[in-house]
Amino acid sequence: MPSDPSHSVSPTRRPTDEAYLDDDPFDPPSSLLTLPWADCHNHAHTLSWEDRERYAISGCRAMVMVASGYHWTPYKPVDAADVQFLWDDVVNRRRAIERNHFFETGLALGIHTGVRITNPDDLLALMEEYCELDEVVALGETGITPAQHAESWGLDEQRAVVQAQMELADTYDLPVLLHTPNQIEDGPDYRPGVGLPGFESNTSLGQDPVLTGDNPELEAVKMDVEAAADAGLAEERIVASHADSNNVDYLLGETDCYASFTVGYPWLTGVTATDVAEAIHEYGPDRVLMDTDCANILKTDVFSVKKAIFELYRLGIDVDDIRQVVWENPRGLFGFDDFEDEDY
Ligand SMILES: [Zn+2]
Image (tube, rainbow, N blue to C red; front, side, top):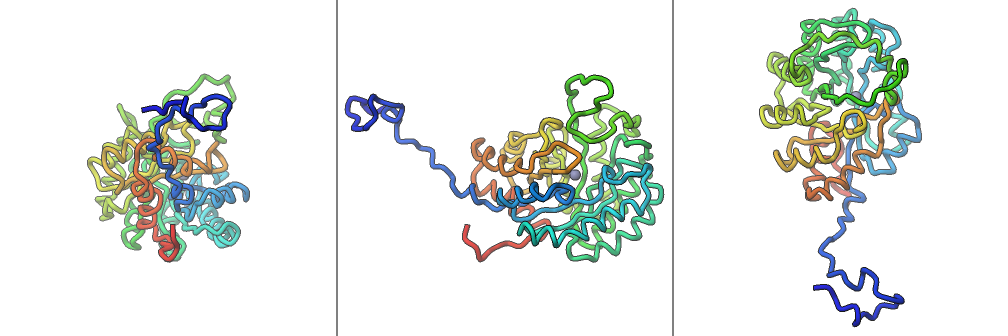
């Protein structure tokens, strides 16, 4: 029952809300303010120093920096040496990034299929040696892409490259980060020539799809899982990044894959903490993760996972389950330090 404002001993001139409110059952979860979290998919080495500092300020303990994207290779089609440059760039700078910002960094190196690569076998041969590096904690991002940039790449060729990376992942006991295509709703109509504001890409160079049908985005993921089976890679070694409402029931309901929700650019994908909460309510937290996928070529939010931590709590997810999603699950997959001697 509300308290009787006439009995208030408050010094306020007249009763405020405080005089009417019951004892509030809400107990603010202050542990969320310092909860350790990991970003299991980003391109932080392409961001500014200040952006990486923002990761540290918001309590990011560890991250997987992904070097595979065609966005950063200037020539089309892409040559093996172009992609190797991306791998070498992140290898070159990783330790300096750790020294500057104190979070732990692991690397994911991959062959992305968003642009045709002229000599993928040369790249796969090189990749084997990179798998031996301690700092390489995953392969990817990779996965069947329904439509390429600048020049198409046939499905059979794409599938062969994806499967070959999965075979290497199995051999070297590494997880694979899948780039699962999002189903993207039509956005606003922009004037001709503007492209897609927020995405530094010449979107007019998008090619006709090589994978068609009612739901090519989901079909691509299913082909990836088939390729993993053919490669002998266990489904529980697959982290499907860019989980969304189109693929989550397949990933969590019909496979043993992990589903990582990219919450860094909902303006493009529509994916938010609400999708993550629904997945946890439906399937539990054991195979759910989050990532920012922050990159310099896209309007992305470094703080998005940290903000989602708070939002998940507001949406009814327990602190222990949030911690599992943002820390325990990525730690188990990518082998980050456990900080077990520290008191959280
Ligand atoms: Zn990415």
